[in-house]
Length: 220
Image 1 (cartoon, rainbow, N blue to C red):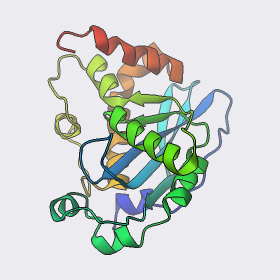
Image 2 (image 1 turned 90 degrees about the horizontal axis):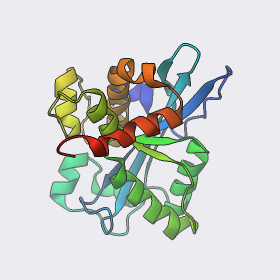
Image 3 (image 1 turned 180 degrees about the vertical axis):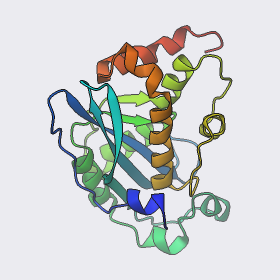
């Protein structure tokens, strides 16, 4: 891996601390799986990328060094077509980290930070399933769906998938469907819509309230 993806992928990362009053740390999450059923398919990899907000200046920044990526060890590898999609080969799946250690590492990395993802219900369901199975608990972190924020801030845009929103904003992903690269482009998408979010408030509670408005949009 090279370029932007190299800057994001820093094993085990290191939590960025809120240096200024009024700042918050949020974490963008992406998962790779053996299929599209969050209730039954297997979790193959998790990536996460830290964001730092500044309530005084009403801005948000990506923190490349505050990042995490792990491949979970699999007893049975995913099928050929699935491997072609995410690029996690048979040997990498067999040599992955013990799931309990991987999930504990993820829990330690995110700490109490709120979590964001594009179509977050999928990522949340997978992670909750696996933390319940391997750690005996679910994480308490709140989640937000960046797709909801896109929909309410750009109501005139008829985009639904991440690829469609990337196309609208002319965003490019160095390795689409690889978790660490997807976290970066998802974070960049949030930055693109931030100018329409910030006037309405930059606290997590403000974003949660804004995202909830999607239910009232026509067609949603």
